[in-house]
Image (cartoon, rainbow over the protein chains, first blue to last red):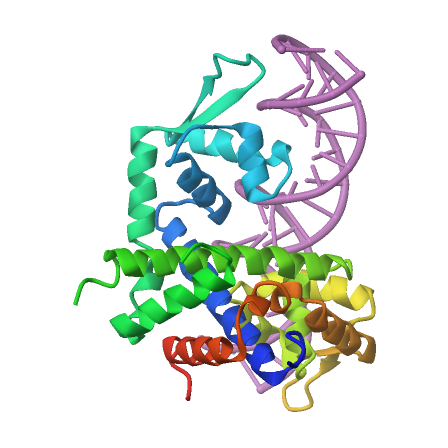
Length: 143
Length: 143
DNA sequence: TATTGTTATACTCTATAACTATA
DNA sequence: TATAGTTATAGAGTATAACAATA
């Protein structure tokens, strides 16, 4: 088998994925902008809409330094989308949690992500099933 | 047919693509970092490695304001990876062009993008052909 | 007048290091 | 002493507005 890094087919797939990434990124930031959120703020809010988590774990999930999260949560908190709560089990920890308004904004954000509409609409149901299975396998998830 | 924005299959595909985007982004920035480049600098350099283009067109391609490009090209130029040239046809225009060292760095950057290695290696040749065709169709390119 | 690139400004994100309050 | 969160700082990316040179 040819190397996964140099054969023309793999290079083309990587380039196509690069195009998808660029397009997804553009539309994600657009959707965030409609709610006056930056991309980073939207990602944190989406995370917190699922469950309250400690500041440090937000940083781990987003792969950035914990000190950055302070400012991002500050700005989300100033807008009433997020709040900090004490952790009864460890008084050092602060749990960041989405407010009801924050959860609603997260839902709007997801529903407003146009990515699903235009590019995905090019594919039939069968195509989407095939794409889902390929992506699952590629990412090493369960079938 | 169910809405492309709300049916469970499409939502899962969008989520899977989100995971791919996150992973691609992480590895792209890692590859750029190995050359002491930021993501934005790496994207501009990759673009200029193909052909010299006016400052304004870089901004259009990257979907940002032209004023931002000044600083990014400044930093690439300070490292000898890029140079500004006059456009003989229009003295207002400056053409940004990769130097030989810049083109070599762009090649190293592409070859060092590990994305092709790990996730794509999970797929057989036939799988990659199928993925390529689905992505092409999704992005509205020629078969 | 319109366009190209730049400068100036302000905000956000990012990493690093030092600090505080807990553990 | 170790850890969680914060503050302070500096660099980079971003948008906006105003400017000089050229068309």
